[in-house]
Image 1 (cartoon, rainbow, N blue to C red):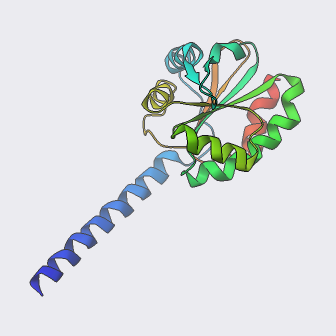
Image 2: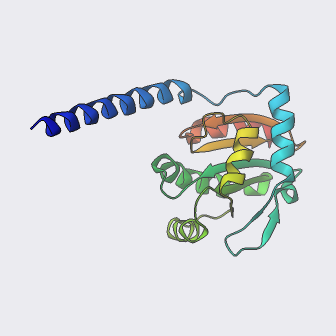
Length: 182
C-alpha cells in the first residue's frame, strides 16, 4: 500500500510539472507574429537561405533557389497537432498567391517516410524538405529559442526575415503579413 501511495505522489508531481510547463509554454508562444531583431533577421535568414536539405525523394535542395520570392518557411512534424491544423490553410494560401511570387517551403522535423505519407494524405502543394536536428538549429537561428513546433518564418524578396510565429498561425494573420510583401 505504501508503494502505491508513493507512485500516486510521483504521478501527481509529474502532472503538476507538465501542467506548469504547458502554461508557461502558452504564455511564451501566444500572441501574434513577432517582429524580428535586426541581428536575428540577418543571421537567421543567412542560415535558412544557406541550408541544403533533402526533399521527400531524397534529392538535396538549396533553400536559396527560392531567393527573390516571398518565402514562408514552416517547420512542422506529422505528429504535431497544431501543424496538422494549419497546413490545410497554408495549402489554400499557396494556391491563392502563388502567381504573385509567394512560395511556401515546409521543413519537416520528422522521419522522411512519415513526412511523405502525411504530405501525400493531406495534399501539400509546396516543397517539403526534411531535416532532423539540423532543421531545428535553423529554426533556432531564426528566433525559435523554445524549440517548439510549428514555427513559421516569413522572408521578403530581399532575403530579410520579416516575421516569425511560434505556434498555430491563422490564415488571417498570415495574409496580413504577406500581402504587403507581394
